[in-house]
Every structure is written in C-alpha cells, then in structure tokens.
Image (cartoon, rainbow, N blue to C red; front, top):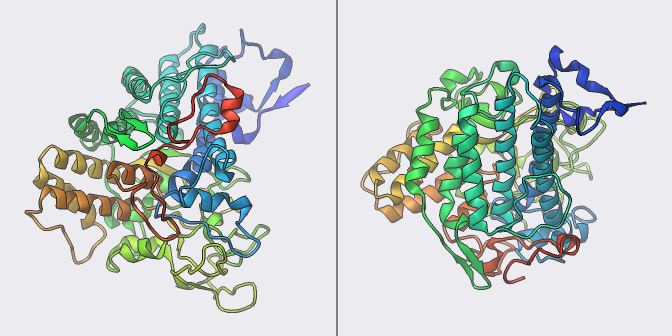
Length: 521
C-alpha cells in the first residue's frame, strides 16, 4: 500500500524539482521515526509541510487580525454571512472564549498555528540524528518558521506554551515576555546558517532578510509583546526602538531588495509599479522579502478575492462569496490622488474576467456603495471591496497564484521611520515616510518638514493604513498606538481594554487543563 502525499503539503511548489519528484509517493511501511529523513530530499519534503501550513495563517489568524479592526467588516447579507454571528462578533470586539468567534475563528487560529509549531518540531526531531548536505540551513529554516508561528501565537494570545519536542502532553503556559525572548533567540541563532538569497527556483524559502524582517517587526511591537495585560488593559513593557532600526537597516542596506516602481516592475501602465508585490507574478517583485506561496491549482491558491467579490464578478464553476468589505471611513481616509486607492472597488462594477458590466442577482447594474446602513441586513452591493491582490488571469475557480507577502521592503521603511521618530530622529522619520509616498503620488505630496514627534506619530498610523491595508498589520498598529480597543468605528462601539488579546478558546482549555484564561475573559 502507498500513501499519496497531497499536493497541498508542498507549500513551495517550486520545490517540486526533479530531485524531489520521488516525494510524491512513499511506501507507508517504509516510514518510521528512525528512517523517514534519510537524506536531503526526504528532509526537504518534511520541511515543505511546515511551509505549507503558512497558508492557514491567511485564514483565521488573518481574519481575526483584520476583521477586528476598522479595515474590514463582514456584514450579514440576507441569508449569507450570518454564520451564527461570528463575523460581527469579531468586528464588534465582543468575542469571548465561548462566543461564536471564540469557538470557531479564534479556536481555528490557535489550532492552525500550533500545527505549524508541531510540524516544525517533527522535522527538527526527524533530522536530528541524520547527516546530509544542506542540513544546517534546513534546521535553520524550521527554527525560523517555528519562531514565526510563535510570533503570531503571542501576538494573538499572549503567553502560550513553548514546545520544542514531539511529546504529546499538556503544557503549562510561558509568559508573553518569555515567548518574545524565545522568538528573538531562535531567529538570531538560525540566521547565520541561512543564505542571503536562494536561486529563483527556490523562491519563497527563508533567508537572512526574512529573519531580519521578522525581527524588525518583533522589535517594533516590543513594548506590547513584552508588556502585561490585565482586566483593565495593557501595561507596555520594554522598548526596542534601536533594535528595530538595526533590523530594518539590515534589510534595507542588504542590496537584495528594492521598492517596486514603474521603472523596475515591468508593469504596462503608469502608476502600477507599487502593485507588483501583489499581482499573480509577484514572485518577481524586487520588494518581497518573505511570502506565503500560492499557485493557481485547486485548494492551494489565494482566495482573498473570492471572499470580497460579488457572486457575479467572476465567471466559472465557483462564484465569489460576496462577503468581506471595508468601512466607508477607511475608504474615504485615502487621498483620491493616492495610487494606492486602486485596491478599492467602489461604484459601478464589472466582471473582472470579461470586463463586461456586472449585474446583481436581480439583474440590476452592480454598484458598490461605501455605506452600510445596517450591518445585520446589508444588500448585495453595500460595502467597498478590497482588490489588493488582483485576479490571476490563470486562476482556477477560487484559486489565484498571487503570493502573499508577510514582509516587504515598503514596510521596513515605515518600521524604521516609526522607530526613528520614537528615538527623537523625527527628520529622518519624515524622510523615510516620504520615500514611500513618492512612488504613489504624481505630483508628489510629501509630508512637510518640521512636523513634531506627535504629528509624525499620527502621520505614521495613517501611512501604515494607506500602505498596508489588508496585509494583516492593522490590529498590531492600532494596539501599538493605543487605538484598538479604545477606538470606535462603525458597528464597533465597545471599549474593553483586555481585548488587546484574544481569549484562549474554551476548547483548548478543556483539552489542556494547564492553560489559564487571559485576563478579563
């Protein structure tokens, strides 16, 4: 009997080179803990499963990170998208361990991230007693990926158990600060064994630049990640602004990345260069530092568009789902002259596959209205949609081949700007912000020189919205700027400070009695 290793296990399909083709079928009787990873090809197959799990981070971890903010909302549209109230539970920040979102989306986020940790541990355990060419870099990759899963776990849940072995047993929680220290240590230890770049056919594998980018983001959020949360809210911990600057500089000055512009992106029309990091061929973008890999193949393609587009905006066997929207205030916050407004679909709509005018299900012209008067009873066309990752011309049903960049160079400049400003280097921060703005405004609209530190703080939160909408960063930004729970926006009027952390799902507490619920829940 043979066990087929599903194509979905191979997150980096580019790894399916001739040297790896034997991984598609493996005799089940031959797989044992003692001999599974006998050589580099077999170890690479195991490592691919750790990469593959990254695609799940674009499901519920992404959903709870975005829909709990002012960037996204999933209104109920008749019989569609009620789902026991879980989407509005996230957006209104009413989630608990037993609420609709707590039992579903939040629980799935916890599970998917710990599966990533477990897969990394299995690979590290499996190759611990083997020797083959390239082992050191594979060990480093697995450690970095495990650290990245832990980055997301502590971001969402705070203190979680640190697990580095394959034993299946209840684990007590570590503090959030301990998880922060573990992530930092793992990344620094793994970095020397990683290459600065990979060959094109290995695009998507972890590099030194990816480590530096994760560290830059870790240090940017250090005051939050090393702080403590009580029922009354967050007490910030230790700042790492200088470390954030150093890590961002390591990426910026490496010579391996460049901001995507009209000049270097190969795009056909003026003003589209910045979008190269999101198109179906964004594996060629000079700006992407680390991305989750997708291909236009059933079950392993990016489906962000399907979540947002109207049912009639793509032809084919599987219609879009007409769900995710943005708020009118967020849409209106953008300067109309900003080329980044291209990510929004508002007003009369077309079928993205054919270019023909799109109709709603009643046969009327489809028009996306920014306003959603009642999120519990929205119409088909209410809510602006986000089209940041445009349709792949070669899409297969809901599956698009656009990669999802967790980290790109544009954000590194904004991280450096924020850290510089906090260090009192406000003029340097303005220069970095204007570098980002220069590629999306024509004529230019730079920030004025001479702004105060607080004015630059305010400008940074706005600029991160403009630059990073829908890239999974908004919740962190609002928390860092003390505006996540205290801020109110349409359909979110609550102010519960302890919800800067999500609850540990009741399902997990029942499974592991050593877990202790986060404060306030």
